[in-house]
Amino acid sequence: MVRWVPIGPIGPNDPTSGQRYLLLQQFQCDALVQSVEGAEDAAVWLAGAAVCKALQSGSQQDWQRASIAVAATPRIPQTQCLEFRVAATSASLLAQHRSNPDAVFTVEPGQGEACPRQLVGLTVVDEELRPIPGLARASGPGSGGTIVRLDGYYVRVGDVLFDGVPVDAEFVGARDDYRPVYLRMPSSGGRDSIRISITDTVDIAGTVTFFYDDTGSATGSPPPLETTSPGTGTPGRSPSNTPSPTAPPSGDASPTAAP
Image 1 (cartoon, helix red, strand yellow):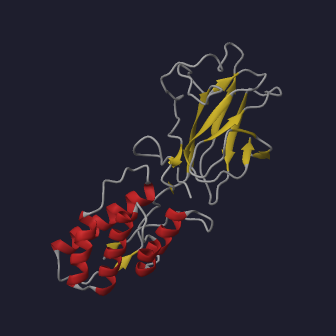
Image 2: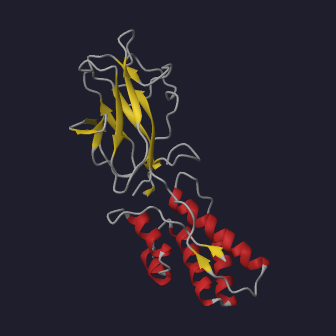
Image 3: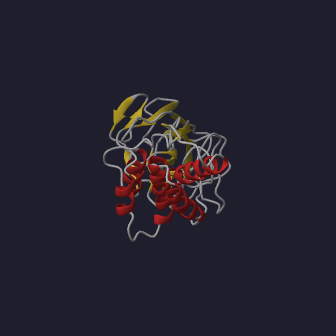
């Protein structure tokens, strides 16, 4: 028994990489090959499709094609979590075939998720969206106006919730898929803190907390070095349209995504 790629998770409106992953997950090998024709990032998907076909046919010729395709796959950063999982799964299955070339594999779905979506932290930034170092926690004055970056892995932010209640949040900058999202925090309204959560195209775990603190200004002049407050993760998904970027919870700094 061998494990195939796990769920993405992939939503019905996720962009290109998500749709490719869904084809692979569903063993639509030929459709995947057609979908990446002429694409610059085709190599990893062609490797996945080749292994997919070899698993279905059991043909030594197909396994040889899969071996060539896997060898042609470039190194994939973990921030491109869908492609990273495809590359890792393809290489693992090829290695298992080589260790037992006469075996007929029974394929089971992979465990877990390739890109679990979660909100893991906040980073206070300046008006140029550059992180402000030196803060013990994500905080700002009670008068409001502090800009924060939502850190974690997400794809398309839908609702923003403060203390569990959907709000008409003030977004700063663009809200592109797989990219970090920034909010301008409201005035405290007498609160000491706000617990923030978000919705995505699929369920997203995690809440983060912004604290109101009038002992100092969190929106002062920004040094050039990027640092994040404790507990923050990497921002949005990678520009390759693969689920960081917002970034995955582990791996290289991003890296979203999510789709």
